[in-house]
Length: 340
Ligand code: SF4
Image 1 (cartoon, rainbow, N blue to C red):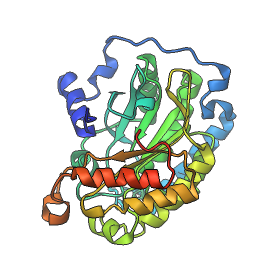
Image 2: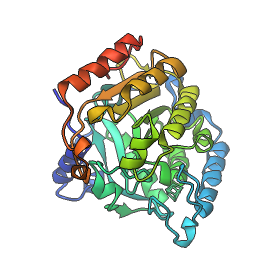
Image 3: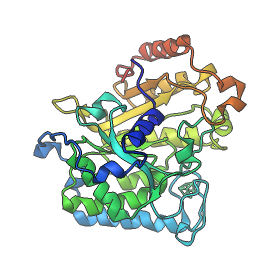
Image 4: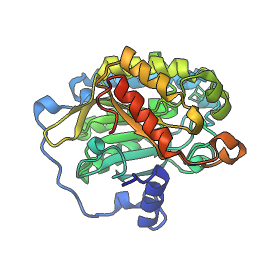
C-alpha cells in the first residue's frame, strides 16, 4: 500500500482539528499508553549535563545575528529583521504538530511520530509538496517555551519520538526548547528530519542531542540541484558531508524490542523521473562511504507539485521501471536495508 504523502497527512490532521492545526494539542483527546523506558534506552540529551545543553543553545543562538545555519551562508542579522534565503526571522514558526502515522514504520510504532512542522525552508525545491509551508510560510509564531510545551504534549499522548521537520533555520530555538522541556520531563528520542542541506559545523553542535537523523539526499550532481532547488548547486557536496557526519554521530539504525527506532541514521531518497536525482551515484556513495547496512527509504511517490509543470522532464509521476532499476542497483551494491 502506498504511504500517504506528508501533504495528505497534514491535510487530514488539519481537517481533524476543525481547521486549526494546533488545536488538538490543548484538547484532552484519546491518549496512547507510553511504553516504559529503561536506563539504557535514554535519549542522547538525557546523558548530557544540563549546562551543556544550555551552552549549545546559546552557541546556536549567536548564529541568528550573522546567520550561517545552512550552506546558503546568508550572513544576515535575523535578530534585526533581516531575511536570508529562507525568509525566516529569529522567532520560531510552526505550521502543525501532531502524531504522524505516515513516517517510516520504525518511527511510527503504535503511538506515532510526534512531528512538528516548521514553517519556511532554506532549500526551496520547485516541486515541493508543502509549498504553503516552505515558500508561503503558513503557520503560527510561537515562543520557545510554547514549543517546549508542545514537545511535552506529544510525549504525553504516547508518541515515540519528537520529529523536527525542516528544522535547520530554527535550530537555535529548537535546542533552547529542548533545554526548557528536559527538566519538565521530556525523555523521548529526537528526530532531525532535514533536506540534507546542512553544514557539518552546525551538525557538530547537535552531537549528543539528536538520536535519529532523518535526512533526504536529493541530488547527486550540481546541475539538477541548481535547477530545481533555487540555485543550490553545492547541495551534493554539503549533503554528502552531512550524511558522513550524521553517520559518525549515531551510526546505523538501532531498534528497541518493539521495532521502534532508538538511534541511528535513516536516509530518504526521492527518485526523480529521468534519473535526475542521481540515484545510482547516491547508492554507490552510501555503500562506499557510509555502510552497507545503512537504512534507506527509496521513495517512489514523486509527483509533480508546485512549479514542476514548468519543467517537462519532471512533470510526470515515476514509472515502475524507474523504481525497480533503483532497487536493482541497491541489491547489486550489497546494500541490505533499502526498503524501509
Ligand atoms: S538559515 Fe536561512 S538565513 Fe540562515 S543561512 Fe540558511 S537560508 Fe540563510
